[in-house]
Length: 212
Image (cartoon, rainbow, N blue to C red; front, top):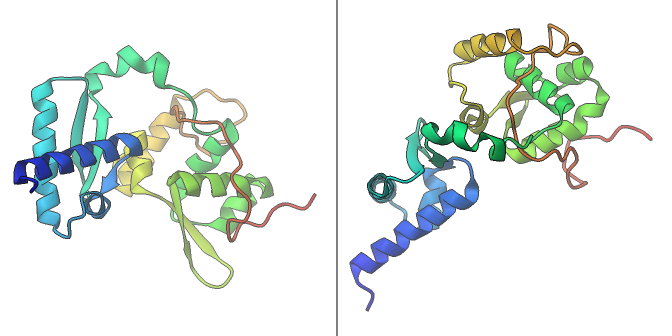
């Protein structure tokens, strides 16, 4: 018969593995599934135990509970400058980054307005950003969608959840970015991201492809 302490250790290990593999914040419900528990209270208790374990290790990584009951494993900020040269591989191409910045600044924004401003070629960009979990699209009616950024977007870029404060941050970022081809109405987030893939698998819904 497996002891309670061994069961607890197994669950802590599973949580640690999930947070490491995800590479971004996970919700409590996702972590409840990881440890096969229906109790949010139990899982939060396990997370707090894992937090203390990481603190006692005094290593480079930490576990944090973020607003909205999301949990992340991340590098301690004191090590950011030390490893910067190894971590700054862009997630998006420059054109996609401009589109994401435009959405983030003007959100919630209709998809049609984004297409009109950025061009019909950005359907693959939107598809890619939605797959990455940076944006979500909400249907307004049969033909229209509204696009917004996700909590993961805010976590990834270190931008607060308050929309007005976020707009001020975008303005400040744009003021210090010297990119001649960027128009004033299209602020860009000049923050390093990951993988430069700009196209995803075919067949994702609601993203018509431009005619050949």
